[in-house]
Every structure is written in C-alpha cells, then in structure tokens.
Length: 304
Image 1 (tube, one colour):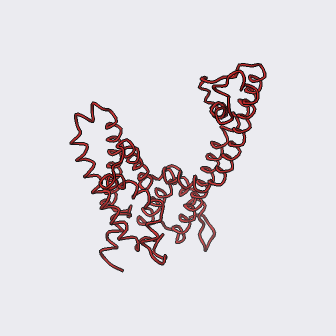
Image 2 (cartoon, helix red, strand yellow):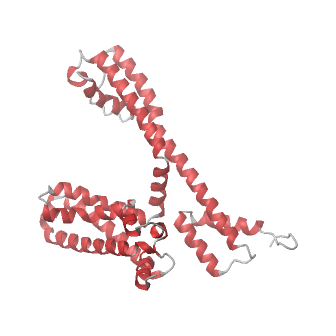
Image 3 (spheres, rainbow, N blue to C red):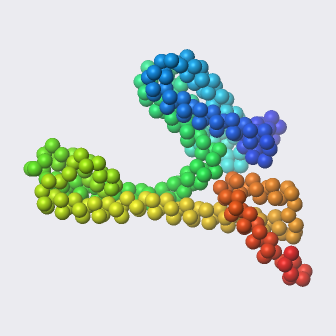
C-alpha cells in the first residue's frame, strides 16, 4: 500500500476529518459557481462586459477539475469499489462518476482542437452540475433509485410510446382532412398526442370535429394516469430505498451496541454512516434511541 496514494484517497473521500470535508465543500461550491457562470454567459451584455473574467474563471476551473480527476485516477486502487478489480484504474475510468468528471472537463479540451459552436460547449459545461451527486446524499439517493428502477421506467415509457402512437393514429384518421397542417400525418399528430398525454395541453393544436373532440377526451383521461405512472414509480422506489438504508443503519447500530455501550468514536461513525446513507438526523436519532431501548443485557435479560 502506497502511503501517498492512501493519503490522496483519504483527502478526497474521507468524511470524518475537517480538511477533506472542507475540500469537498470547496469543490461543490466551485461546481455551483461554474453553473452560475454558464447561465450568466448566455446574457450577451454580461458576456461582452466580463468576457476576460469568464475565460480566466473557466481556465482555473478546468485546471482544478482536471487535477481532481487525475488524483482520483491515481488513488483508485485505494477505493473499496475498485480495489478488487483486475485493473482498478480502468474500473474507475468506466464508472459513472468518472465519466461525469470527464464530461466536466472535456468541452474545454475539445475546443482546443476542434472548432465547435460555443453554444454547444456551453450546454456541455452545464453537465458539470452532475458532479454534485458525489457530494450530495440526496442526489446520490436519486441516482440509486433511478438506476434500480430503470427497467420499470423503461416499461412505463414503452407503454407511453404505444399510447402516443395509438392517439396520433386515431387523430390522424379523424382530423387529417380538416387540419392537414397539424394532423396531415401520424408523425405530425404525435406532437398533439404527446402534449395531451402528458397533460401539458399547450392549446396550439386542438381537434375541431365532434369525433376528434370525443377522441381527445379519452386520450386526456388516459393521460392523467400515464403522467402519474413515472412519479409513482419514483416515489415507491424512494420509499423502498430509504427503508433499505434504514435497515442497514439499524444493523450498524446493533453492532455498535453489541457490548452494551456506545462510545464517542462509535457515535461519530454512526453519524457519518447516516450522512452517507442519506438518513435525516431525526430518523437516525430515533433509530438509535429505539435500539438502545430494546437492547437487553445478555446475562439478566433486563433492558440496558
């Protein structure tokens, strides 16, 4: 084990010491500042007035993000998630967060070799906001839920696509002679079908015939349930994941209380675990209190 490599890893990942925490906070603030800069650059007057400052800030940010990327690559063999891989650094490079880190700096280096529209680069730079997932338990929780429920989301989107095609085909059959500019083909009618099924209802395209309106009513009613389906999947996924994390935290509490005493180091470790798992402080305190109340002496069977 290389001491320097281990130190680099601890400075990047350790949440128990104040200096790594301060470093992580600084990186998170830099990410937010970059997002704000990209937004402000889209205002022509501000971009013209502070063009040099924006360029300087971009160069400094890319230098810091590049340094972070290289340090994480260097310390990848110390990371538990990659340590057992045949090539820990390759495993890290292919991980989702490493790809996000790469996307955060790629636009700058891309512009050095390829003449790319600055508007496209600006949009790509906005993707740096996804780096916050590493420093936010809430975003990490959302990513975990989205990953676990990917098949459910895919099924819901597939059903939605079928209904959109059905709705567009029906409106094409009913309205194509009345409004050929809007319903002259099934692909053209898919705009109305999508807007109606998602219950957005811009109102720019509406059926004119009685049959078209009746059909539109049915599609709108179907859209109410379809629009709620992804939200329901996400909500149930959040509930299951939070319950799993509470159970994991409860197991850690039971281990800490195995000797009937909770030391300061064990309490700090539990606090860090609750933060990493995204469990609110109130819930963590309630789980710890419940475990302490239910803890019994192995000799007399009385509550400790």
